[in-house]
Every structure is written in structure tokens, then in C-alpha cells.
Length: 256
Image 1 (spheres, rainbow, N blue to C red):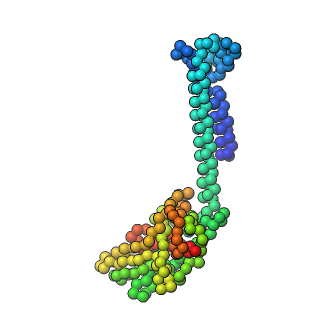
Image 2: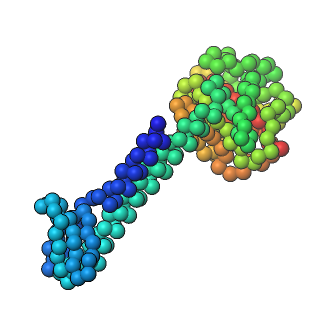
């Protein structure tokens, strides 16, 4: 339906190029409003819009160069507007196709050629004094003052890519902050971020190694994310979080 509408608009714009009124300039500085003219020998025959009839005038009195320049300027403007409308329609159709491509389930999807590979969400744990506590979303974790780390089990992710500029889609359950972090090995596990728990207040200072990324919103609560520069081999993760709430969620991956 939209494609048919665009065709009709394009045809209408093309018609406007030929049917719109313009000025037939005379050499004495005056002009006649017309929508069409022809040169016939030493005469110019034109349709006088104001009077609604065809009239003739000596060619020697008409400034054809100025008249042609105005007609061309008008035609170029109409064609540019038509081209812009066509490009906008194409962009909207491509954006809609991109949104339909991503599953409706929340999560992170790795772009692998023409396919999207869903990443399994990692189960992060707070490690403090050799104790491990699973980090539950929206549930406070009882922490003791001092240093701790947020870790994932195992030295490597089961999600693997060889693309140094991997692209991901992330579909959020609600508008949250998100980004990409680098993970570091620690005793056969991977550290997502270092934590400092402040005495008395129990405030948690989170210290992830943030990877600079580009972000593009492609739909409601749907974004595309990719590194600003090629990544080095190692362990990484796409993360979703709320500042100060200790609710970081991670979809980890290994770059080989």
C-alpha cells in the first residue's frame, strides 16, 4: 500500500514539473505568468494563466535564457524533493525489515552473516572472602565491606566469534543502560568487574572495563551495538545495568 502511495506521489511530482506555473520573462523586466510556451519561428506562443487563454508575443521581446533558467531551477527542485521522498521511504522500509528480523524475546543476538545467533545470558556471581553469591536481578546481594569481584564461571564463554567488529542486537525489557565490557581471567574464571563495598553505607562502587561502542536505536527498546574499533582476542560481554543498583546482566562471548 505504501509503495503504491509512493508511485502516485512520484507521478504527481513529475506532472507538477510540467504543469506548475512559472514566469515568462520579457526583456523590459516584466513577465507573464504561464504554465507552457513554445517558440514558433519569430513568435512565442504561451498560455496566459491569468487570462486563461493562449497568446503570442514576438520572440525579440522575450528573455528566453532567464525563462529557461527559472524552469530548470523549478524542475530540479521538484526532482530533488521526489528523490528525497523515495530515499526516506526506502529507509523506513529497511528499518521496518530490520526490526522484524530480531526475535521478540528480550536478550542479545549476535549478527552472523544473514543469521542472528541468540547469546545465552551468563550467571554472574559476587566473590567476596572466597564466598560466591549468585547475582539476582532486582534482588539486593548481602555484601560485607571491602573488595569483591563480579565473576562468571569458567575461563571462556560458550558463545564464540572471530569477528573483531562484532555486531549485536539487544532487546530490552525496559529502558536501561547498556554497553560492552572486557572480562579478565582470574583463577579459572572471568572477572566482569571489580567491586568496592564502602563500610557502614554498604554502597557498592562498580569498576568494569568499558569498551567504547556505537549504539543505534532500531525500534522500541531495540538497539544495535558494535565496538568503535576492532577488539583484541579475549573475553567480552554485552551488559545491561542500572547505575547504583548492582543489577548488571551480561551476555558473554569469546573473541578468537
